[in-house]
Structure formats: C-alpha cells, structure tokens
Length: 433
Image (tube, rainbow, N blue to C red; front, side, top):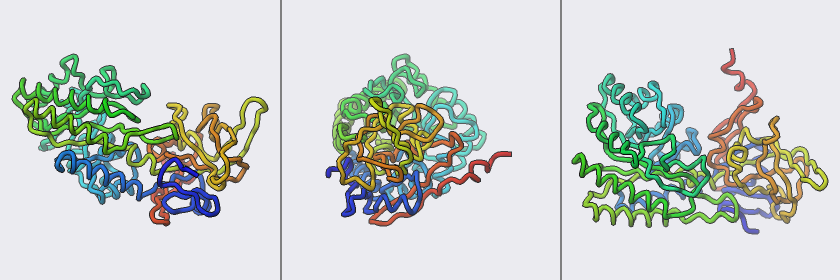
C-alpha cells in the first residue's frame, strides 16, 4: 500500500515501520503515547538545505533550524553534526542548545518580548545575532550590552506585508502582526537609524518571516524582492550596505494525502534567482542568506503512537475511538483544526474503511485529534499511529489534567534509542511546595 511519507513502510506482519523499526514493537518497549522521530529523514532534509545554499548562493549562507518546532538536546546535537545553525525564541531553547554544546556563534535569538534576563543570558553565551523586534527591545539590548561591555550583532525583523495564504494564527508577515517593524509606516527605517546610532549594537542585516505551512513559491519570491528593495533604500538613505538577509521559513509539509508541498530545493532555486536579479538591479553586494526551516525538517520525520481504549458508536451520529493521549501531546487540532492522517499500526495492511473521530483522554469535549478520519477497523488494545507529528507536538505538549508528557524515541537504521524520558507522576509535583 502507498504510505503518506517515504520513510514509512509496511512489514511482512502487516505492521507500520519507521526508520526500519516496527512501531508496534516500539509501543511495547517504550509505552504509549510515544513520539517517534526518524533521524535519517531529519539528516537528509538538513543536507538538502545545505546543498541548496551551496548551489544557489555559492555557500554564502546558512540554514538555521527553527528549534521551536522541536527542541531537545538530541535534536541540537544532530543539528550541530549536520553543520546547521539554530534559531531560538526563548531563554529555555537557548539553554537547551547550550547544554547540548551547540556553538553559540551559530545561534540567532528571536522573540517579540525578550526579557532582561534572557538578553543578559544570551549576551553571556555569545549568541551570533539578536533578531530585534521593536524599539523597546533595541534600547534594552543596547543598554544591557553596554553594561556588560559587549557588542551585539543584530538583524531587524521587518514585516514585508506579504499575504502567505495560510491560517490567520500563523501568518506573521502582514502589517497587523505582533512581530516586527512595518515598512508602510516608516517604522522600519526609523529602527535602522536608531540601530546605527546605538553604541553597543552592530546592525548587520534584516529578517522577515511571512508565515507557516505555505505551499506556494511566489510569496517567498515576493518577500525576497521586498526585503532587497528595503536594503537598497537603507543604503540610499543612510549609506549603510547591509550584509545579511534572513528570509525566514514556513515551507509546507505533507500532513494528508491532498497536501502537495513544493520540493524545498525548488523554493530555494526560485528565491535565489530573485535575490541575484535584485542585487544586480539595485547595485547591492549579494548578502549572506539565512533561512529558518523548522517544520520541514522534523514534521514528516515524526509520528505519535497511542493505544486504543474505548470504541464508542453513537448510532447514526459517529464512532469515537479514544486513545491514551490527546490535546496534552497534540494541541494542534483544538487550536487550528489541523488535518492529520492516522493508521492502525498493527493492521496497516488492511482496508481503511472505518470512519471515526479520534478522541483524546482529557476532560474537554474539544479534545480531539481528528474528526471523520478513515482508519482500519480497530478494537481496544490496538496501536494507533498519527503521522507527520514531528513538529509542534512535543514542543507544545502540556500537563493539562496532570497528564505526564510522553517519551521521545529516535530511530535510525532499524534501531531505536530513547532521547527524552517519559514524565512520571513524581515529575508533576517536583516543583510543588
């Protein structure tokens, strides 16, 4: 049978495998719910991005893994081994990277409301760049760097005004956004001038991010043109030629069969053509290019395993299949009504002719993982696999209802290893007084 992603197979016993490992055996060994990550798939995508940077920009660039998509020490170690940079958005993500001995010079620190403590910690660590979001942060960073006798490299986050045709909660490039400086109001140029005058800051470039889960190339091309036009204006008005351009991330992945993402290297090629054309036209030295793939690196590499509990049929209404996880390990359906494909891992070779609503275990009527899903016939004790959950599932997991968070297992070449231990009840009360 055809599987959603190329790293998934069906073995001779009719079980789903990922990275050459039987998912039913994983559930038996490590328990459920369980996050499973295919390390080879992750590394392959990283290598593709690196090759594209080399091909399209002559190596004058660096892909940064957006760690908000999936952050733990093991993924930071893998990114280090693959020569990737890292994008962090909090002190906690930065601390995780430091604990994994990730090189701080290859880290860019984002966030629209960085605290004094986070800024001081990032300066102490020696992060490569701060991506400055607003004038309040600009002043605070300049002041803090001065007190610490440091010089901070910065990029300014710019809103290019691009409609990325995605869910309104994950559109970040338009003027009405909490992120960044607007071009239309003159705010962006004001920020450039303030940064140039700041004694303890070095403005090296600009950054944009137009949204997430985007299947079209044209918004990225247009964003590149807008950003380079702004860099031209900066040079004309201030005499400063910016040396770096971060074009963000947002490349779509395949959650369900109808999703048709453009191959990521095609995104890169078309955007690079626009970059080179604009640089020639605007008489700019081609900047160093950064990009921030997150979901596209880990999304399809992951799946989540559950054990089926109750199967409840309401005649002429629907059938609920309840699992031992839910919104605590995958809040994306309750937040965004995100589409997923699910299979019964121990019966994946059978017809998917059972229409169900997959229900979580939390005391919330909206705790669902998917509605009107077609899966194989299932009974209590079966193992359900929800596919393409490598991004924003572990990262957004919670302890609602005091449910412990699942373990994370990495698989590669037919072997599995534990990367994050399953939380215990003792962990839940560890900080209680």
